[in-house]
Image (cartoon, rainbow, N blue to C red; front, side, top):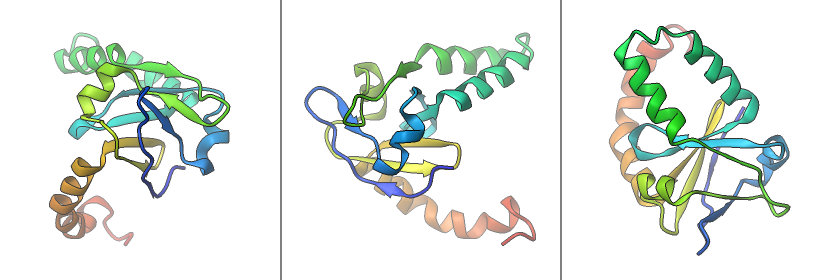
Length: 143
């Protein structure tokens, strides 16, 4: 499970340090791909394979399934962190997420998300009240 908020910087070569607490779990490989709201999703290889199987089972006759799968897989990049725990984010993914220097990496349960820090701050400002308002809808009787 991935939790927390971290603020690494992207270096001039497009590399980013993974949060230290997750380096061992991700050391065997990971997949970076486009996420929603212009962030990047980072999946451990096993989780990406689980998602791949779920999408494989979805009906390819559904236009939305085909469209989602095309973007999801076409933008995916498999990476192995270097010995210092850095990953290289390919230029097209950096452009998609607007990553320049200051980044925010958030834990999102089964994945990490990489955001431009300014975009994350704006997103959080817009969504924090909605988070408070919808907790009963999303988790009825739990919280």
